[in-house]
Image (cartoon, rainbow, N blue to C red):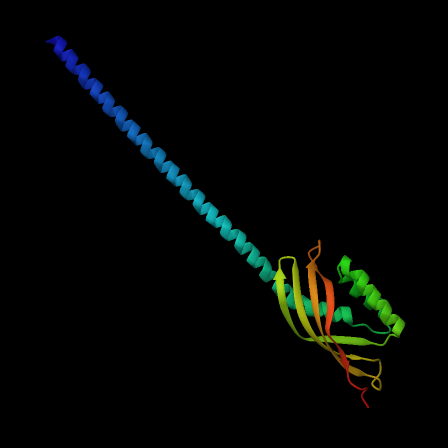
Length: 193
């Protein structure tokens, strides 16, 4: 009898152990599966957030470029094309400081041609402009200009011109003119009488 009780006890103990092991195994599988799903979900959320951040950052940089060029571009063009006879050296130096290294030599050649032709005051104002394209470090703009050429009221001529300007962001974060193309050459009227 004792042997039967012992055998019965051993069988019950073995069944209980098997049930405990099965329960622990099932629990471990559920916990492991839950952890895997949680990590996968977190990675998906992080990947989506990173993708959104990357696209959003680029779009914000492009919008910042458009805003900066819309504000600064017309003033830069005015400064590059305007000069006075008394302040010619300083005006040309200022214009050169607004140009990229690649465009500066072409600008200097144009300035030398102006000096050889005989300098007269030239003042432009941007009356209309539009940003054509923008990326974080480059932009293009059309600028319509009006102005006057001449030093005194007798020889004063009113002028208009349209230019396309390419801009590049320099290493110091400032915008520089990379190219300036005259689309509509300056039109002058007769001197005022």
